[in-house]
Length: 223
Image 1 (cartoon, rainbow, N blue to C red):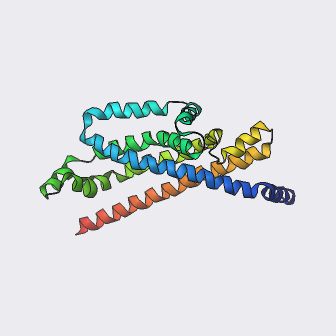
Image 2: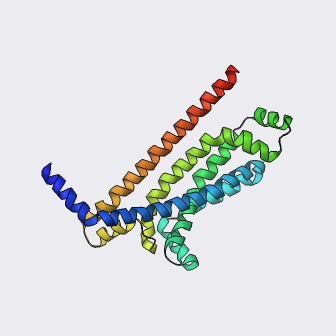
Image 3: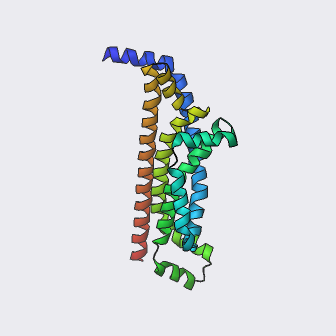
């Protein structure tokens, strides 16, 4: 145990600052890619529920984009955006779209007509019905899509180092190129921990939201 502790301290002494720096870069890339995915996919999913004829083709196109190999997509970004964080964020944004878009469309489509009819009967506009009735009911399904995308993006962001975007992938691939297992572990372990941490936090958030909605509905029924 003492030997392991000494080795761990030596390892952190040598790589600790770099791990923290690369973790910050990794989170930066992942956060903005996911944020863009939410900003685009959620409204698009809502729009598709109002135009069901184009829903299938649009979702199929987004699905096709996700089948492009990661390295190929990153390479395609270089002539357009150059190298660095911007092309990496755009590529990861494209990968984040499908789970959020699909779940938004499914969640909104599954809202019972009874609720929307009541909203219309109360004089709500289409936008008011979406905001006050449909989105709250579809939120757990939408959140599940965001949850899935977040874990995907954190994992895929390791490849961003190939185009100079930084992140924990720098440590992993530097270790592979230079035959240094310590560097590989220095990049791989934080990526795994980040993915697990985000998965746990979003799971807890979903549970809290579900419990809150249940208690609220229970209170309304008592009234």
